[in-house]
Image (cartoon, rainbow, N blue to C red; front, side, top):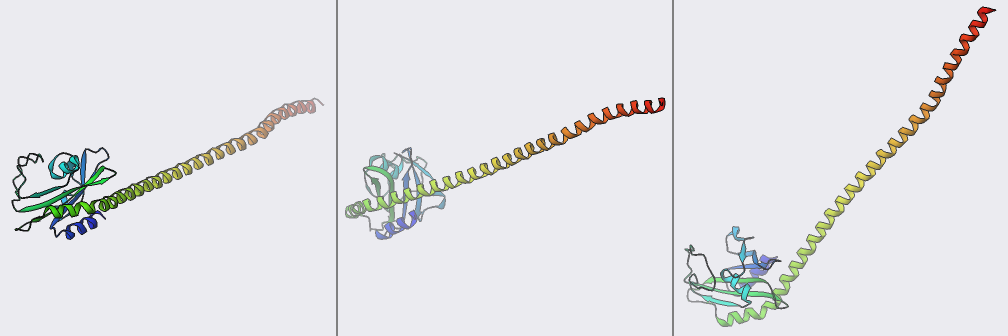
Length: 214
């Protein structure tokens, strides 16, 4: 899963927290897919491309090493009402790219306490990015495939239900045609009988009159 992958990266760099976000199809937002030691409510939130550290990395397709508080850094367009500062935080953030196209961003953090990330750490992270990017892309394709299979399964169920309804309607139509045919076959002899009964009654009246005359 995305969280398992992120966990390996955070542990590999002795980080304390981290975040993995993926680019939307419209390429205007990042969606936070996984996090380590971040609020659960953050999962699924959108980060506008060009806003914040991850948004800046996604827009510029460049890795970042940040040590200390960045709340006043004009590059990141952070909210003015942001009150929590991280003077002792050390962070690294990399873009995930496939064929020179940004598909997401991964970041890791730790409270430095004199043990900040270095440029060497950032470069080591860049060396692993192609593999991480391919793994993430493979996960996305797998999820897309599962989504398509689910949609096709639902469509197939709808088609089966429609077919059952059509068969039921066809059966009802056949029953209606059969009933009409039976009614026609019954009405014909009844009509003949009724017609003959009328004629016979006329003959009977004549016969009785003849017998009376004799």
